[in-house]
Length: 306
Image (cartoon, rainbow, N blue to C red; front, side, top):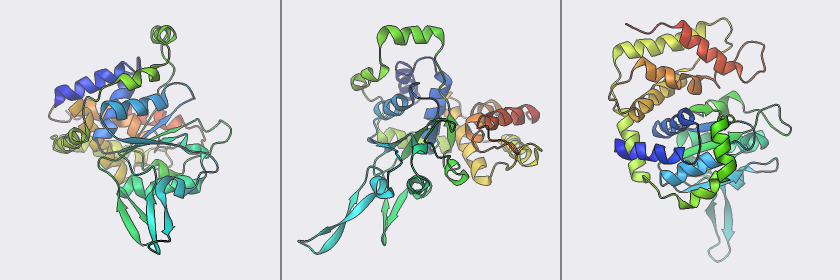
């Protein structure tokens, strides 16, 4: 299974060039049963990454373009009256898939954004008096543009907290940008990709991640990091218990990607910025990048257990 996972990551690296850490974080997010937020400027490969993840991991997927006029029913689905039976039938929306790409999620109204909340947390959708289970695995990949761009609505804290990780791809380095210029659009390669895994393998990997050993000393370290975020003078709100659980799952997933059987402090540090960066907010600051800087300072301040 580990060999297949490494093959999947290697295949992703042929599509998204020069971003090995971001790719592994995205895969760790999937294996930890979390949801991923990719925030960056247009044109750096956010949508291509989501498509590649679905293709390589053999997941059914749908893309929803979030716009200012999007309604919750456009995402969840709608009840339609059938005159022949004199009954309403629920017509499922694009949310009923294994990987849903919520493209430019912060261009939709808060009402449309909130349609994802129950789905992301409970993996189900309630409409009228009926609850519908979503497929398993269920993985939300949302992209958003920087808040300072025109026509964006900032995601509220309750929505951000549903995302296990937030990553940024950034611009490619000169070598990989030259390769992009010579070879053209990477998304043109996507139809040629053969799935390396399938949904059953993904579920097996997710179960294996949960069984990775976590020592008491590692839990002490993780709790120290969480406590430091709550006591830090510059941080308005520290990490919640749910964020702490997500941090542990993400570290276990990173350990699995590295092919080990027990979580190390290095694994926690590797995922800490992606897990904590969008949850930490500096007092009296509107700079979204502050969270990632604060996460780095927390890691520096908390000693690794001997």
